[in-house]
Image (tube, rainbow, N blue to C red; front, side):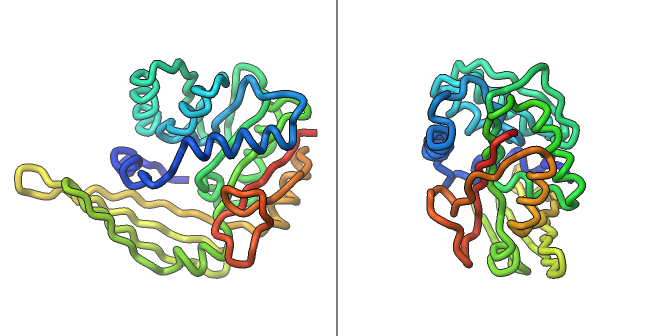
Length: 249
């Protein structure tokens, strides 16, 4: 896993199309569907990034813990939480070494965060850590990019995002055998008529559903459902993201 040192400053602006309020409502709908007898009071937002979803869930009356491996992202999350007047517990931790002060009713991990784990052993370690801190019967809800998206959408493609004060060039390199994508993000920031270049390098891996099912089962979770993104419909051949609902045994 590599960091978001440069990306953190621009993350919210590049991801401005994400409707975090709708995402929070969708996740809570899944909790209601699969745990109707108990509304979650405490939730972990794993890889919470700049905290937008964490805050939306807190606004809905849930005690939230946000964990992220990027101190730069957590600084953004702290600023937004203070502005919103929402007290959050934010921890800077590598998800593979997750260590909470107690248990939570459930956990969410969204926006492809688990795709940054490029070894099955790393992904398995995260699931085992989550097993330790989710209460028995609690739900783990996460999403992941699909192999289809990595091969046919991200692939070897490049994307350009242009704003008034910066330009981002996003370049991908596909490793077809493992459905991994190397990502290079170059930000060109205008300062006094000159441009400063900032670069982040990331790698993401897409996993087959059978692999995820196997790892979850071995870590102590029961898979309850797998859905297409932001829906309660089955995953299709060309789905770009799949959403897992799993219960801690």
